[in-house]
Length: 544
Image 1 (cartoon, rainbow, N blue to C red):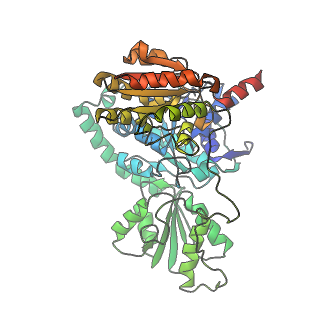
Image 2: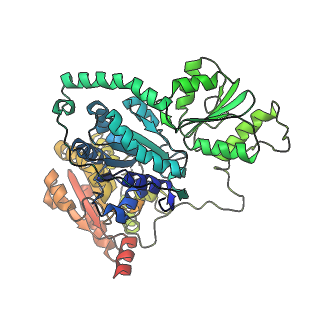
Image 3: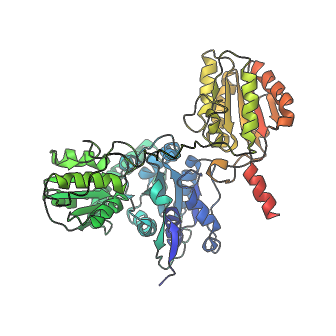
């Protein structure tokens, strides 16, 4: 038997992929998915044989590179958070049409309750949209097993497989029992090139093939050991999906409830299992982490109102599920019927949003010694010269500049939007049009917006806050470090208007002068605010 390991859910996925014989992992850092790639990078098992594990520039390039490794016959893991799948969507959707050669598993980490994200979208929609298999683990052991199984399934059906996890599973630990690893695939490039060339004639044929595979995927889900039933009595039941199964079982076990439960963790929905189970009960609570995707399908499939969940208000329409919320839903239902445990009162508050009256909220803040602090101070000083003080922001730790005491940032929408929104505002006549973007975000999806601005000769100033790392997610490598001047010049920004400043208090007067000069320029200008992240500097000193 293999040695047991205490692992985060993200680490369990990584270990499962390593033991499945992957040859590479491609990813862009994003909470709550970052630890998957970091675990592989730090694993001694990834050294011999070598597993390629450097960070990609963005999620689209990561997915396309993973698809290329699959084309060559090797197994490959690609990881991102839910909003990253929006960036990779073009490659992802079309990979369902090309299919795969070596096994390809896409791990998407969703973030219900938006702990560190702009939205809480449910990636299972993308999986259904692409018509590929989806796996949704209920715990860390299952995360490990599904990661291993996902590669076998991918090669069996010649399709990418989505493994969907959430923040709570990704960032909690449990003991995992691994199994013996398998070797990497040998090099075996595809010989059916037409399948990978999505000209309309080929794509139509491939799409027909994808449709024909749906019956096979359905049958596999019907037979999956990840879909199982736990017996119980009465006419009320629970259908729980993924991690929601753990929450439901905690309530059922801790309160001695005799309620049947159907656990579903592999999709497409196993229709025969669902129908056989649902027809036995008068009322069924649907517990799924994320959107009411399956609840909506079941309501439509059965055409009745026996189902309870997010759609009817039994569970909240937004945010994470929890044992407390399922306790309220289950015990409230039981009390209306034959439950004798009247001493247990349903909860009247959502514990996720309630704080103790003696605990004052503590908003996040920029680190002491952070270079962004001095940059925002300079920008604020300059912007007092203008009646309209609009600064377009982006995704990164510098987004905290939107909060007091700086309150500098006016917008933050998605990766790279600072430049393109500033461009649109400039085109509308807003002066000055100023935006702030981080170094990693600039290479992720800011360069193309800058090219648009150059081509249109828009009047805007782009500040690249370059701290030499992807600081928000823990200090991963930043793709453009040391090359931002050359990148901006290559895109077409005039050299005279690519300026470098060092955001320190002693340089404040010079930095104010540079910012004022570039805001006055009627054209595209770039200011590179270059100063190393304080935590990276501390780490380097500690290593010396």
